[in-house]
Length: 375
Image (tube, rainbow, N blue to C red):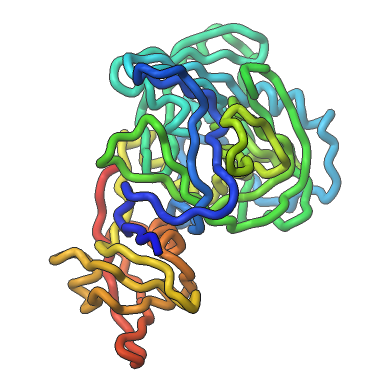
């Protein structure tokens, strides 16, 4: 069985199908440019408590979303709150979409702008076709999020900050719309429903180095068509409020990486993204939590077996050993190594979680205080 490190840089197991980042990425590696590929994993998401203050964004609206969707009524403002992004650098180029926040800020996926983080150029196109430039305020591979500072001066009402909602209020079957620039087709609006919530996955970034962390998201699944170029764009509820950040699509194994939507799109829940966005805008970086162990699925599918425990790491300090089978962490059942990582990622460095485990047929509990690493 494949093992999964709780300090990801290492990949976890996969399910049938391939996650394709919903951005167009060309990487200069001496081979033809293509689209980024990543595997479908099992893990709930990134981020921390949604109660963190978001000083760079418009006020959040907590009123319930309508049950019915009028996409034509929502589209004009949704389009003005969405930009298309093109990033170029020595390592290649990427393109995707972004969500306009207050104060000249834009949030997008890290994989959209990764090529330009070190000395590249980022060009932003607004709804009326005018272009401007942006700089990176902060980016995180671990959470696949980035915050840009954009010069919107002189653009008037062509750009408005997005109205932010809450992903906590979503329900399966509720209508949503996705906005972005799939395949460079700006001002594209598609509609669908929330197909599933808490869909765990691992998303690899082809621009990442061997020591870089891997992103894990606790995704909103939608059948609203999402294609390469939609990455970083908004997923709106029927009230016209952003509830997610479109990030990836699923294609069948063996299908071309250029494949488009098959009705399986995935977005980062807004509530899990907001604390990370706030930290990136304020500090330019964010730390992700680390357990300090590698894990693998068990034969019976109950819990995860710790295949190794880092000496001096949080798991070891809590008394966990290689061979222990962890069944719950922080009160949440974990079924495989990726699920364990994602449950860790839903917390913050310094938090203490209760781990229930089995050792040689006996049950035990450990208090694990997570460490942190910038990434």
